[in-house]
Length: 247
Ligand SMILES: C[S@@+](CC[C@H](N)C(=O)[O-])C[C@H]1O[C@@H](n2cnc3c(N)ncnc32)[C@H](O)[C@@H]1O
Image (cartoon, rainbow, N blue to C red):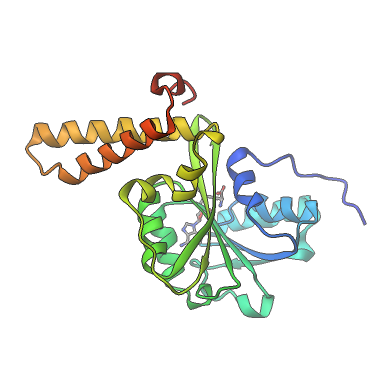
């Protein structure tokens, strides 16, 4: 039966994350809050079923209420829990795990507490609000390979979405690759959000570098990062002033 209510389109951030989910997946959306990702993907028919969890009952109840409103309660199992703990991922046949809207360090902690994610068939879809370099560093050091990366622009902010899969080998990234993503750098200005992202980090690193010099702190690593970022800008050949307007 078709349900009368259709969820309005996801914003660019959630939509970029949802686009990384595989067709026919069974997802676990960790820290679901409003539950928009599972509801939207179910309504679209892109996924077969979903688990949705949150550590707090307020957000989880919001997701449950939205699932009722949009007629998706039968296809979503809800869990009040910390991270991936106590979710029967294997029994539910979860293939794609989504963790969006949390800090990169918290996302790393959630992953490291769950051995189930060390499986080549599981896709992780991660959207850190901060410490993106720490998250990429965690993935690189712990046997996860980054398979896709997307940029999104929403509410005057830029977001990075990362898809990763366990392959058991460690990966090495340069400081700029940790910050911007190797795949995002490779795609370069083909993505209109690349230049504003690079510009944002150049500005931030310049301020950090100047602050360290003023305070007499060791600025060597910041200088190396700045040099690498400026080198990327030069190689990609864009006019830096032109691309600062979006943010
Ligand atoms: C900013 S909201 C993001 C909601 C949604 N994922 C999004 O991206 O729009 C973060 C959510 O994660 C939940 N959360 C924080 N720490 C968590 C944890 N350790 N395990 C599960 N959920 C957590 C919070 O309660 C909150 O609902």
